[in-house]
Image 1 (cartoon, rainbow, N blue to C red):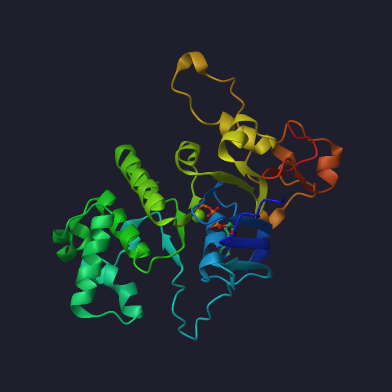
Image 2 (image 1 turned 120 degrees about the vertical axis):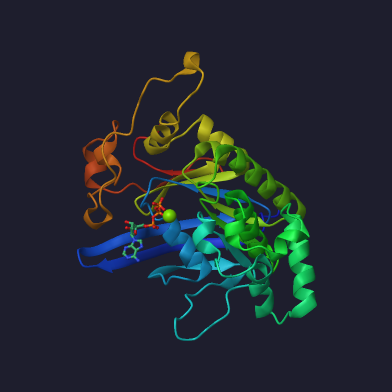
Length: 318
Ligand SMILES: Nc1ncnc2c1ncn2[C@@H]1O[C@H](COP(=O)(O)OP(=O)(O)OP(=O)(O)O)[C@@H](O)[C@H]1O
Ligand SMILES: [Mg+2]
């Protein structure tokens, strides 16, 4: 008897996005595909500019894309037009890196959390009650309802941003570097909170981060991006223990190790990410890769499956 396939909450297939800039055409997403199951956390990692936030905007319907499909809970996502004021999707929430810029400084916490509630017709006392409940879910007391963002610490602001994102009980939360602007100890508290919320509500997370320690702590699966493509994906323990793509290996080698007896041979990532305006032919990682051969510089690798859950994009995997 075949086991039932895991139900998919998010399904992204062959997503392409180009930006036309003054300097030419920039491929920000170049055939990105992945799935996220209910209650699952997929971490998206990769150097600055590889397309992580572009992908998040497409999932949120904030940005158009040129080819491919996105489905969330069976519904196709299309970009929201600037002209028709479509309400945001109820089933997707988002938390950005910097709460200072994502929370309106002129609004009290009650109104900030109340905004999404207003979009579904909730008013007055009901908003206050629900906003209070949401605050308690993120570990803040009702007294915070009447504060302005500048009266909160960075960690408290991020808790308010999470409460707002959860207001309409989304099935997917997109977290774009949610702890990168916080002190390490506050980071740990927010990550713990996100884990607890996930266990309670079965919400799925797309967790964008540069920090592989954070991935290890919170994610079930990881997708490694390089210049608009996912170059390796799989369960976190497997990918971190046995990376197949040399880029994943290089990211892991770049993580500082505190214990000096465990210090790895330095294998830094040589060179810069090539400009997406000027993609090298063949594998985009080849110019920085020690394993690269003439094949890598001439043609693009196809995805190789490595077991049911793992895939990588490389001619000469580790
Ligand atoms: N509106 C835009 N117009 C033109 N180019 C853009 C636009 N937004 C992003 N880009 C470019 O698209 C590429 C991907 O950008 P994106 O913001 O998705 O990267 P990122 O992985 O989120 O980076 P970071 O880790 O720095 O946040 C970059 O080369 C960026 O310069
Ligand atoms: Mg980004």
